[in-house]
Image 1 (cartoon, one colour):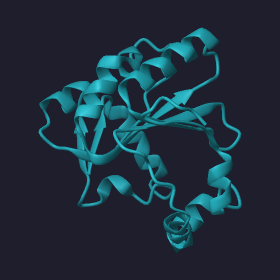
Image 2 (cartoon, one colour):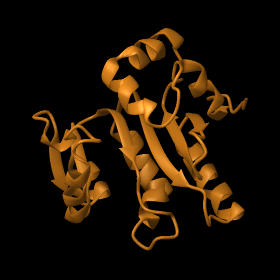
Image 3 (tube, rainbow, N blue to C red):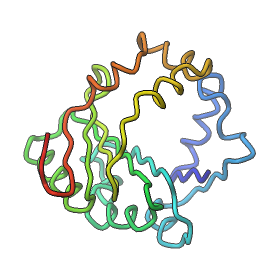
Length: 179
């Protein structure tokens, strides 16, 4: 698993939460890279099953390039067959016109798009892929039954598979139909 972080200070800060994140960065399967995410993806020959991006707010000077069609296309080019991209998008202080522009840009790149609104936070998760993302209830319930997963998520709410369906706001399929 590759972790790409442009600022070494964020990696240092993660040590303060080692109990909460189960000391994830010390896992032998994790390769930590202090690099620009775009440069890392451009120079990589790897394909990923999952790419997760949580850049700063779009209004932040440093995050602008991570909300562009060029970045989304770069991520799409590094996704394996069946891979998904998850982009965190804060909604606070984001003008509606900017939100509409970001969503339109994301939808132009990815054939299949889902928008999730987890909990009551003021952010959404954009999920993009080349293929439909199957929502398999039994797989989700199995994952939620794992003691570590259940323990981690229980800090936030009473977690059941039905809660995940309530957070799904919108789906766009290849044909352009929405639901």
